[in-house]
Every structure is written in structure tokens, then in C-alpha cells.
Image 1 (tube, rainbow over the protein chains, first blue to last red):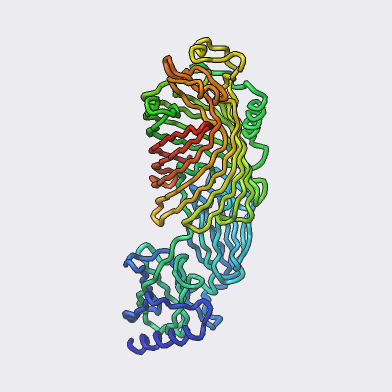
Image 2 (cartoon, chains in turn yellow, purple; image 1 turned 180 degrees about the vertical axis):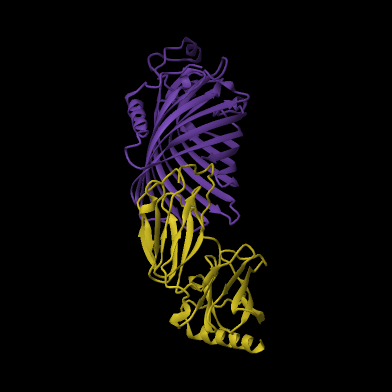
Length: 239
Length: 309
């Protein structure tokens, strides 16, 4: 276990020098490899912020040069609902090549858009009667921030990964993956508020057969980009 | 309380027709919305009196309900047609109780998609306000142009200018004003609320991460003001641009119109009470400088609840 930990730390610092873009490790952020135990190989990551609160809706992805990392070749189709003037869920993962639809469960109209570099699009204003017409394909890995042009507070993220080796942290800030092939991976952690360039950090990890690595990570969260939804007496106009 | 017929001017008729058109579902895609605002507060100088003895403070309650439709005419263009009804009730000065009805059209051009794109907003509204007496009844036409920009998740800036044209009912001659030295040769108008004004304004909001919202605003108005007094003087009579017995009081009060510049400073704190509602504290200070070096102030403090449906 000590060997794995040392190698992970060593790889991390090597990579942090090599990958200038998108690879910043803030001083306040720390990884710790806690234990590994015999079972099907996997990774469990426990995320907390600098106040010790669990970090929900963070994406952990294992990146590998090996094309066999992807456990499935079927194109993913995901749904991001619009309900009570909110996107549900607010963070979704999809494998590159997959697509997302944006049903409208409200009795009002929404106008979904993105101008993220990984995918730029905007739908017309539409209601529940036309919501099946709009589906977007995401070919390029990256993060797509979507919003509603009518309701400024509506915000959601689509994390387009390279393979199915990715998952989203739960209410306890825990995210786990199993079933990957043993080998060397880059573990990427993304969160919409992670205080780092492009909101992600990476670390090299080695997955050993029959072992699950348990990691803990503390991250610094920046201010949420979501704007306030509640009206105010000062500016009561419809938004 | 005397209520004038709703359709009492071609302008109002035109805009009412526009509002009715907005109810046609086939016009284009539209979102409906409504909002209710209930507030209570205190005003330090309700009659806008110049001299201390005539300054009357009063607590008040207000209720406003607005509803409308938002039309998206393109990715960058939206049109909002809305109507509002409102009422205000004063605990100590019942003569200032009023009800109002207004319709508005608001066109927004957004430079790009999203919450951070700058917006230019053009608005026009027309409303009527009915008081306890006809002398204070008025209809108000406004044209407003504003620039809105979210600078960050925390900061939001609004800059704007507006024009207001207020019209009053034609009033019969009131013989009581003879007692105050009314000169029929000079023929001073009776229409207290017949005037127009222009203003420039700026407002800056700061939202904390926990949802609290602070705002500060400034508005400079070049126009007129309507004040009341129990001691009209010859000097005041010569400065006034309209004069009439003030129906807001039982007797002995005269209301007059003066050309005036007003500096309005406002502060607000808004606390979200749910995703679609908030409780708000507001404070406004009015520094009114009228012709003849007539300077006076007014302060309004209010607590309000706003809910979007």
C-alpha cells in the first residue's frame, strides 16, 4: 500500500509539472490514499470542502490511454429534465458520442443554450409539447454548461467523459467506481465550483487487481456561478 | 372614492387593447407570470410639506398584483406585456389612500445568450391612480430606457433614464381657493398632477453567497412636485404652477404644484424566504429642491414581501 501511495504522489507531482493546462493543485487541496482491500478492483473517493462539508455533484473520471477502458460501446442517451424552473439533475455525465435531451415538464416555456467550447447550441423557446424534438450530441470530451435564456438562475452541467469510467459524488461526498481493468490511470476530479483552472484536478493512480483504493480529498470551492432566483422588491421585473 | 371610467383616454384604450392582445395564445410562444407584493411602512412627510407643522407622517400598507406574458421573439429579443393593480392605505392620512391600475410593455434586447449578457430594455407604461378626491387623481405615462448588466454572480448594475407624463382630471373652479388669494386674471391651473418629468438613475446590487441581496440606488428627477400646506402665502402662490384645495384633508389645506429637482437615495436588503419569494427592507430618502429655494425632505421605510408565481 505504501508503494501505491508513494507512486501516486510521485506521479502527481511529475504530472503537475508536465501538464501546464488544466492541472493545478491548490495548496489547500490534499489527496490521501487510505486503504485498499481485496475485492473487485475499484476506487472510492471521499470529497470534502475546506469546511469539512461533503462535496456533492463532483465528477470523478478515470482516464487511460488504453482504448479498452471503455466498458461499453453503446452510445449513451441521457435526459436533463426542466421542472419547476430548474434543470434536474444539475450534473450529468455522458460518454463522448452520447446525447442528451431536455424534456420540459413545466407548463411554461424554456430556452436551453450552451456556449461552452465543448458544445455550443441553443434551442428555440419550447414547451412540453415540443420537448422531444431537441436532442444534442456531445462528441468532444469536456464540460458543457447549460442555461435557460429566460430563467437566468437555471444552470446545469454535462460532463462529457472519454469512457464510462466516471461517476458523480453523492450526498455524503462519496464517489466510487469498480470494474475497470487493472493498470495505471489518471484520476480526474471535476466540480463546477472547484477553485482550479477549468474546475478540475488530476492525479495518477494505479489500480491493482482485486483491490479497491480508498481516497480522501479536500478541495477549495469557489463561489457558485448560479444567480439568485428569488425576486426582490428592488427589481421586481420578470426574469 | 370616485372612480373614473377605465377608458378615459385614447392612450389608455390603445394600451388596454395591447394587453388584451397578449391573451391571444396563438400570437406566439409566451410564458405567463404573476407576482404579488405586500408591504407596510412609514412615510415621514406624506403631504410633501415645506414647513414643519404641515409635515404629516403616516404608516401605510400597500398591495400590488401584477401579471403578464413574456414573448420570446428571437434568441435576443423578448417582449413582456403586463398589467398591475395596486392599492395603498394610510393609517393616519386616509385622504392619501389610493388604488391604481396600469398596463406596461417592455422590450428587451440581449447582446448574447445567458445571464451575463448585457440587456437594453425599453419600457412604456400607462396607469391611472384614483384618490379620495379628484384633485389627486392622475394618469401616468412613462417611457423608460435602461441598461442592465450582471457583472458577476454577485454584482448587478442597472443604469437608466425615464420620462414621465402625468395628466390630471379637469377640475371645476373651487371657490374656497379665493380665500387663499386666488387671482382669476393669472388663471393658475387647477390640475395639480398635470406635468412631466425626466430622470436618470443607477442601481447596484450585491448578492451574498447565502442569497442575501443588498442594493443601493440613486435617482435624479427633473420635474415637478405636489405639496400641501395650511398656510399658502402670496410668494408661494406666485411660484406655484397649479393650485387647488387639497381633497386629502378635511379642510383648510391647499395643494400646489412646484417645479422641482429631486435627489432620491435608496437602500435595500432582500432576504429570500423561498425559491420564489423574499422579505425586503427598504429605505428611501428624498431631497426635494423646488423653485424659490424651497427645500424639503421625505423618508420612506418599508418592509415588503414579494412572491413570484
